[in-house]
Image 1 (cartoon, each protein chain N blue to C red):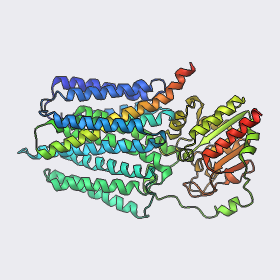
Image 2: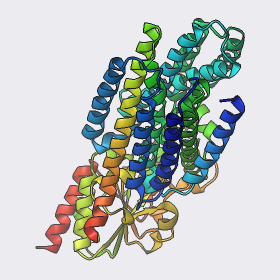
Image 3: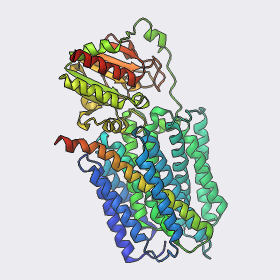
Image 4: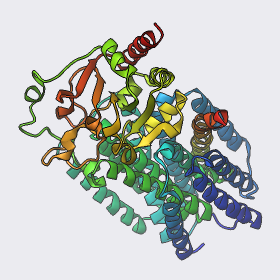
Length: 464
Length: 96
């Protein structure tokens, strides 16, 4: 970007400090609100000092972009329902990635007009931004569509070779740009390949793996910004982009560990196939006990400790408020209520926590998997709502698609009630012997209605 | 800025990011993600210069598009994070 004034440099340093403090604050519940505000202040500072750049000669188009962007962003952020949060995060991610592509595109056109060739750094960084930014955008749009359930997963087993080939071609084109640094065709081809790779990589990934994908796309949007910084010679873009890239990678890693899978396994293997012998009829027939809301309420009335384990099904049924009412009713009756949260429950990292927070459930009652697992043996009743694979005891055995995945040990509580529409398998496609266990009761039906019926029955029992 | 300085910044920032984030409670995973996502909208400052500089019409409009998208990312990201965090914190204050 050439010479930047001292004022701009000073502003950028301050802004980088604010981003660091902001991210640090976001890591602790007590300081998170302030952390977010610090991050926003850093961004405002960065934009304001950039406006003093003497390269800027015309303000109206720029102002137009800022106003339109702020209106759209503000509207989306204030209108969204909490259940729609994963989609929105994915969408914002994609916009950031595409913005980086456009910035580098504009810069490329400018550099092209100069008599001399651009530096190798510019060329490689521009190529990297074009590719990563485009992957981020199209990958996020596909993730958005999947989260809205506009379309499901599809793919074929050799797709990974196609993706590998696309990746090799992209790298080759990027290197070729060193020879032809002013070729518009090459950079457009890189963007196109990026779009293709984003789609073909995310399309085959199943819903339950979405938390990994969302965290990874978050990381990529940071790396795209960082690469833009290399191209423009802008220190703040490099720093802020890398910070986000790193934090996204950490989240990706946490999600992978929570599923006992490697990142490459999530990205390159198709949906797991059911293993032989794990036959649904064999597992279930004659062993499943179904129950009713009234019966569960009778058991709940005398329970001292109840654990509620939510999964993606709770989000689909929009049952979080009904769950809150049930917890309130139980507490009014003197029962201790806790929530067991699996790290990958839902469709993005922390999904269940956000939904339950929206329903005004104190976050101190949301217990992490490692902590709550040691307490299930002292729990009178565990209510599983809309979760399946994360409570499947098969994970403790060898030779199953989910072997080794950490699970919530709900089967160790005295009674387990599973609220579910049917005995259909979860994402892993395998039957869940928990449903047929001696201490398990199936409550078939819509999650929200079932929970409301339980609350009603319970309050009739306690206030006759 | 030389390539070497740029690379130094990149490597240091990656390590700083890893140190900052490595111990975040699951409750904050979503807000952290959407907050850091808003920070990745920093590409906005590159976009601002592109949209305002004197250059070809196409480059200017690419810049305007970039400003719009990046602003959606930034404004929307920080606002939505704040909304989420407000849900976490309001009960804390009510209780005390």
